[in-house]
Image 1: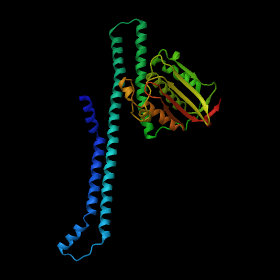
Image 2: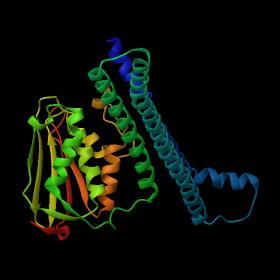
Image 3: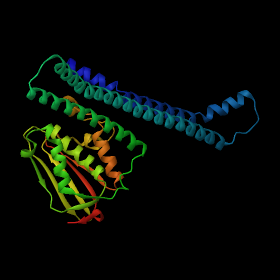
Image 4: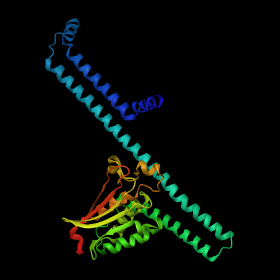
Length: 326
């Protein structure tokens, strides 16, 4: 019972609920005032007699004055609504940025701690050659992780400012070869990746466009499929020509998305509550970068999910005019 009352109080004191309640009170007062004003015609006539003025009041004058007053009150009300919405948007952005800073701090701290421990181990101990090679491998992975993080932050900033343009590139891209290359790069995230992932793509499908841009998009989508799905669940990559486009889909059987998060998933800094609850590493930049690059390349991207626990499917569509050979 107590927890129910706490939830009800939290909902009633939510800024949006309070704001709507105040606006209802405001509008109610204005309506009551208008009704009162219209019903006081006789009172105004009696007041005129008491004052002793001989001027005749035009009936339309009072109505016109009333309309002007209501319009001004409406403008004030509209300005209040706009200010409230702007404040809410700014507050949401600040919360997202704070979450981003926290995520980036965690992402940087982990490899830095690992690097420090590795170097201290190398300095203080005489290690066997195999052990040293293993530590150097760990150092290389940590450095690569930091490099990828910094690169994503820089790319996100440049895309946000419109500095990078991937549409002007005209590389010849063998799609299947590129996918295999990306999978080789992602093996460090899951040593069993090759056994759980399937690729359905015809040979000799050559696209013209930005190889770097397409690599970043597919790399992020594959990485997300690995991070947000159980270690032994299947991941499927499908490439097909549909109507006037080439569709490249990455599908997993992971945590999935609800409709609300599916609408927000491509926004900068956004991370789903499921990802935060499971402490999945990330910064909320990957899918923002994916969508921005897709748009820059003249394509489009969308996400589909049947709900929490039912996996997701991201699909990139590029124009069929980019196909050089099949």
